[in-house]
Amino acid sequence: MAEIIQERIEDRLPELEQLERVGLFSHAEIKAIIKKASDLEYKIQRRALCKEDFINYVQYEINFLELIQRRRARIGYSFKKDEIENSIVHRVQGIFRRASSKWKDDVQLWLSYVVFCKKWATKAQLSKVFSAMLAIHSNKPALWIMAAKWEMEDRLSSESARQLFLRALRFHPQSAKLYQEYFRMELMHAEKLRKEKQEFEQAKMDVENLDYPEEILTGELARIIYKNSINIIKGAEFHVSLLSIAQLFDFAKNLQKEIYDDLQALHTDDPLTWDYVARRELQIQPQPGEEQPATKRARALEMGRKEDRCCAVYEEAVQTLPTEAMWKCYINFCLERFAKKTSNQSLRGQRLERTMSAFRKAHELGLLPEFLYKQWIELLLQHDFLQEALQVAVAGVELFRDSVTMWQMKLQVLIASKSPDIASVFKEAFASLKPQVCLPLWISWAEWSEGAKSQEDTEAIYKKAILAVTGADSVTLKEKYLDWAYRSGGCKKARAVFKSLQESRPFSVAFFRKVIQFEKEQESCKMANLREYYERALREFGSVDSDLWMDYIKEELHHPLGRPENCGQIYWRAMKMLQGEAAEAFVAKHAMHQAGHL
Image: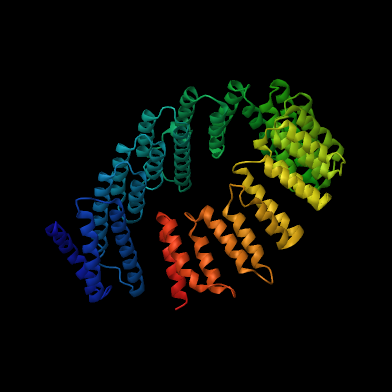
């Protein structure tokens, strides 16, 4: 092994001598580079190979290349690149080849190799890397697409890109993404050729002898891909995706119309088709010769007319396809338009009325999903339509009695309207729902009670909640209870609540940190109480939380009534309890803290 390492270091000597000779590096720096290179070579020549050693070696060489570039720029020296940089690049490629041969399945390693070659190697070398990678990872469409895009955009080889897509489709005949990108590539190629031909014609050059196939210029190849793909991949979503790509190319108007007509003919029973057709009305531009709206008011009127046309299509859609999914598309469109900012109050009013009308119609037909009831109620509350909001919330609860969200919305409306029935509806909700989903309701009840009822009533709610909510959910509730106790009764009340809960597992670290913080905010902060809280916290989290131990030590060191002599004992207790990485983190933090006090 030593002979191999020596041979590889000797192979470096010509480039290192050149670096020293031209003044890019000093003699001392060259010696340091040789030493570092020897260490790195040794690690990748061992019998038990480690991928990280190869990655570190590559990163070192890349950093070296970048340093050479910076020094060249600084002194203005640009010669001897063949003897220096090319030699390093060739070596890095050798390291990558060894690593990718050893760890063939590591896609990230291959991608790093590709990134390196894009920056430092030749196009022919990168083409070979892609070929080697795809031979092993032919099951990943994204890699085929990456290679084809590179062939098209960097090597300017549309034929190579086309061949890669065709090979990829043999491996992945059902891949929508491959068809989409292949379709896009052919349209891009056609657009590029059209521009080239136009520039030649403008320059009055003879284009008859140049290769501009008519089937490519007109987008016929892209059309063939489209036709083949829709026979294999069904559904309006894929169809719409191809139409969206075709619309990026102005020359492909005929193809766009064909795809659009096919979409309407083949997918009339898909809500996505109707959604696309309706939204298309927004994109229709005025005909040539028609006057563009000049004022803000005129533009708002024009937008209102476009949105009316969209809604007319949606109205036809929900008649033709009366499903929950279709109404969802319609209402989402209305909500999106309403969310658009406008200073025109008339347009804003139209949008609100359209949205409310769509919600009401869907509700009357029983085709409104639960999450849209929530959005409807929120919209009504936002505009102070409290009476209708209550009616909708009551209807929502009747339809979705098992939904904690719908009960929350009903209670939100009752609270907003200052109803006297709030407490009774909370109780009704708890009776209707499973206990394990009721945490949000308990929190809402306690928060409402804090503002509307006495402290005794609020505490009674928290106590009921603690008994009713178990497991991980109870952790959040205990933190809320402790926060409320401190807000309403100060540290004394918080201490009492802490004592009442201290055997009521499970806990969070945040629960203990809150009570510690409350104690520290007092003018007469009692160290005895802090010790109690830390000890209680460490009983629960002492084996995993190194920060708790560290903070306990700091408290004993810095508190006026602390006992620094206890710190050694706390340190050894921590070392016994903490495991693995937590113990290492504690040792590091403790060492840093001690160093800061030296």
